Structure formats: structure tokens, C-alpha cells
Length: 246
Length: 246
Image (cartoon, rainbow over all chains, first blue to last red; front, side, top):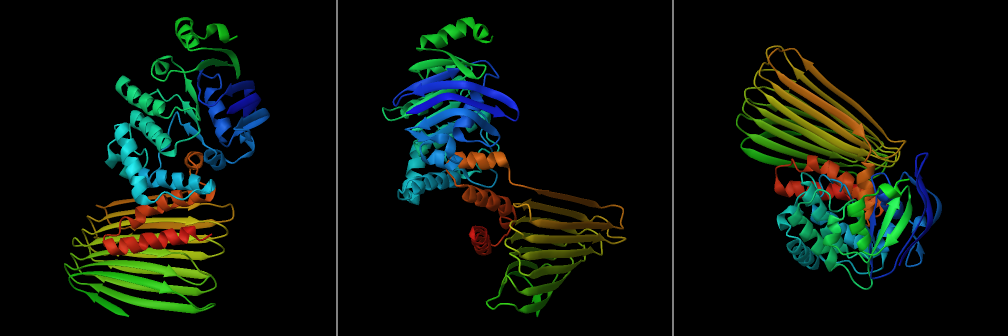
């Protein structure tokens, strides 16, 4: 599904990713852990095509399609979703309007029919209820004045509505209290499936108690330096990142 | 044309040029009686090669209210100009506008509010977008005459420039000859928020559509201040249509 080979990237003159290789097969959830500054967020931005992140070598494909040659919206239409570490505020655009425009733009790009308003609203109500989001909140401008936890829930709501083939969750646990974390994790787990993959980027093991990964990798100095099963996350929690930070 | 208002009225004025290369000059005189209120909404749509000027002279009686929203999309030369003599005495003025200028068009919103006696309020919000080689002009003058104490006047002008060759010329002027007044003005000119644009594209919105949605949201603040619900809906549709035209 997602295949990254020898990926290198810089921000400005500074190299951040240094030959990173990683494969996530369909049906798997892969956790990426690592110290601050290891390149975790850079990886998510390079994969989604943010400006200012320059690829200097290597490849990244999703279902065999070269992601790096596509503009961000085309990557999204291929089913790539990023839950932002710091979701943006979009003043003046109600959350519902924004999500509907995004959903229909993706469907259009895939030559699918647009979702009509009644069907869309039904879907939004259903997904909002599952994430314990007050439906009236979706009528307010997206993320404007929302708390950190509310913004993270809105990310997962958008993910649930867009049903991406491959999701990257960048520090989705930050800013969440334990109850919100459980709700968010349930939302994420509901999207697991044999055709879908996920990359769960986190600094702490806590999130992985609720979103159980199939594989865990350690990212340090812009490369994957260790990969193992879920037990690797527990070991990192005990021993820290020091031995990878050479 | 002369309009005299008693009671409460809404004036929806629309300029539509069907021909090409014309020259038009419209003049309007508006008197609002004591205790009366008028809301004036102007939609100015002219041919790209037309030259048009509309000049309105507004006089209020003390205790009258006048609220205006001017929406323009430019022409070869297009100016909507309003002169208002503010009698104070609790009279209330809102003097809003928005410009949406594309291609090689030019659009100008000019306003003069003359506070000649004490205790009057004026609130002005002008927003706009220029792209391509468009050029927008905002000239807003608020004069507080000697003796017009207790005046409360606020002016805001905020512009988005969406291309390198587009131009905004802003000339906000506050001329204050009284001592006990509250006057404030704010002026900002900038580009669309790149982070918000990336966020929208990551969700699948094509670049142009993302720009349109964010620009519409920016201008919506002006349209939302229209009190008459029907007129507000017409203005919102007018704005959306102007933004979607390439």
C-alpha cells in the first residue's frame, strides 16, 4: 500500500529526512515514534505535499502511484489523509460547508457522483454523534475558537466523513484528555479495515494503548532506526530514545 | 433621482451594463427623516470596458439611521461614491462595502462622512479582493467638525491581493477638529493564508476552489452585516458568482 524508499527531504537548506524507508501493507496500522526533531512531522508534510518541504531523493508511492509528483489535492483524492498536529482555523467557513466541499471535490476527482445535501447531513449527524461532537458545532466556522481537543475531534470527524484509504495521524493524542482520547481512538479504530492503512505518529506510548499498532518503528535523525511489534513501544516507554539519538 | 425616507425602508440598487464601451453617470439624492431608517444595498456590475460613476448625496435628520453596503466588481473605470452629512444627535451610520476585482478591471469605493454636530456614530467596514491585473481603490474620509463632540467613528479596510500584478490603493482619512471623540481606523493588505490553503488542499479542495472558499469567507463579513435577509441572500449569491468567474 504505502511504500517509502530512501526518502530524503530538506526544509530550506536543512536536511531533515535522510534516506527513510518504510512499507505499510494494506490492513495495517504502523506507529512511528521518535524524539522531538527526528523528522516525524516533516515526514507527514512531505507525503502530503506541503510547500517548503523539498524532496531531495527517494520515492513514495501509494498503491503504486507516485505521490511525490502529485499536487496535494490529487494526493487527497487518491485517499491520503493527514490529521494535523495543529489543525488550522478557517474563519468564515462553517465546518459543514468545508467538509462537504472537500468530500465532493474528492468524489469529483474520482469521477464519482456528488453527495447530495440530505445524504451528506445524515452522514455528518451520524459521525458527529459517534465522536460525541455537538452537531451545532459543525455550523460554526471550522476550528475557530475550538479548544485543542475539539480541533482534534474535528480532524477525526473529517477523516470519518472522507473515509481515506490511507491516514496519517500526526500527534493526534496531544491536547486530549483521557476521555477524549478514548473517543478519538474509537473513531480511528472504526476506520481500520483490510483495504486501509494508517501511520500513527506519536511521541508517547499512551495513544497506542487505544489504537493498537501492528508494527512500531523508531524515527531518529531522519531515518527509521528500528522496527518491531507493539512491544517496541512499551520498551521505548521504559528506556527512552537515548540509545537511538546518536 | 431623489429618495425621501420616512419610516423604515430598504433600497436595493443594481447597476447592470449590457452594452459595451458605455459611459454612465448616475446621481442620487437621499434624505432620511427624523426617526426613519434606510438600508441601501448597491450591486454594481458593469461591462469590462465601461466607464461609470455613481454619486449619492445623503442627508440625515437627527435620530435617523442609514446603513449602506456597496458591492462592486469593477469596469474600465468604476466608482461608487457616497457623501453623507451626519447631523449627530444620535443618528447612526454604517458605510460598508466590498470589491471583487478581476481581469484588468478597476473599481473604486469612495465615501465621505461629515459629522457636523455632536453625538453621531459611524461604523465602516470595507473588504475586498483583487487578482489578475485588477486595481481597487478605497478612499474613505471621516470628518469630525469643530463642536461635533461625542462622535464615535470607526473605519476598517482590509484587502486581499491574490496576484503579483494586482493593486490596491487605500486612502483612509480621519479629519478631527473636535476634542471629545472616539475615532479608530485599521487598514490591512495581505495575501491568503498559505497554511489554510494547504489545509484545504490536503482535504481535497483544488487550489482554485480553496482560494475561492477562503476569499468568499473573507468578504462574507461585509455581506453578513446586511440587515435585510432577502437582500443579504442576493448579495451573498452576487459575491459567490463574481468569485467563481475566472
